[in-house]
Length: 473
Image 1 (cartoon, helix red, strand yellow):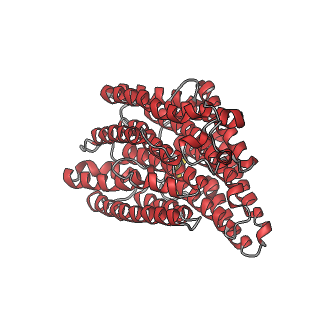
Image 2 (tube, rainbow, N blue to C red):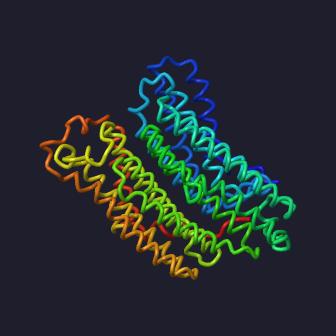
Image 3 (cartoon, one colour):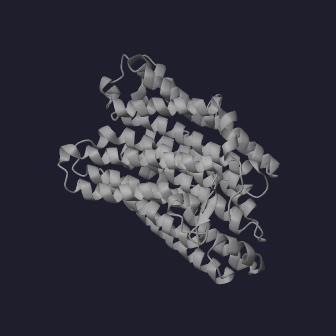
């Protein structure tokens, strides 16, 4: 058994930082709890450095009896998660500064980040479920961090749906174990093709239910708008970004590695779910006036586009490449938009952004870049991500799905422009307090997210090859 602990350096660093931060924060006075935030930043940077070293040395391997795979998908997923977690930490500084539970906030972020990393490399169903729990339970607490009525309601809905679909997922894992006599993907790949078709189908659908919950896809999407609207803005940024990275990469690995040779027509199932998710997300966002709810439904539609890569996971080499690049571009762009929302805590509706271009031209420019980037406008990173994913869908035999995705992309421009138009409207009647800024950390994160979105679009030719490679069994 390969027990190479250095292969799990990013996961171990986040987990260790969470434990040390919790113990340290218990003894620190309130005005010095920023030390735990600094520890969280160091953990993320260390994880990024460890991942870069692994990629440079090309040490692809499976560890602990094959339960965790360290390959191209794991390494790129680590870069996305750790980079996004770093952005969430920086945009949270002013929100939690001086809070009596500041240490707990940073520790919960580190723990749920470690769970997301575990999801990305999970190569065994039991590992997958353990990672699901580690990624989910701290996030339930984070969503209610403000302890207000809307946050408490959001957390309860988040928890109840997560618990329901978590139990459903566990039942599916038990069913697949019963018919496949294994939990490791490489063993299931061999045994499931000979198992009863109906039982394999039920097991697959119930395991996917948990991963669809993490991603916020139809029909497990109901929690997304309420949690996004009720949670503090940095937490909303987290729950609409990182769980999707973990859930989608985990889903891709499960389908590609364990179920590739079964007779179950899961590509059609994923294609239908992708079509429903992107269409419902866009239609629900059309007439939203709350900026958080608009971004919540926007993120549901983005998951629909990303699910297209899972539908053709075994049909084209473009699928994994497109999925990883799209996730990186989406993380930067979505977090950039949420950083602006964090920076303007009093601006809750679209009309509260009237005249922003005159009062804060930098933040207005970030919104223009990020919102048009979410549409898929060149030269943003999401444009290139959509181009590769749509090409993968066509290459995989789902041209109709690619056509529907193009139609949804064009339609989504409507509700993003509804937000952008007030930025350049005269401010005679606009309330000045709506443009009160929070501080420099959230603003810096916003600028970084917009810049990264553009860099990924302009330098996509150099970045895309990193998504190539085979998944390890």
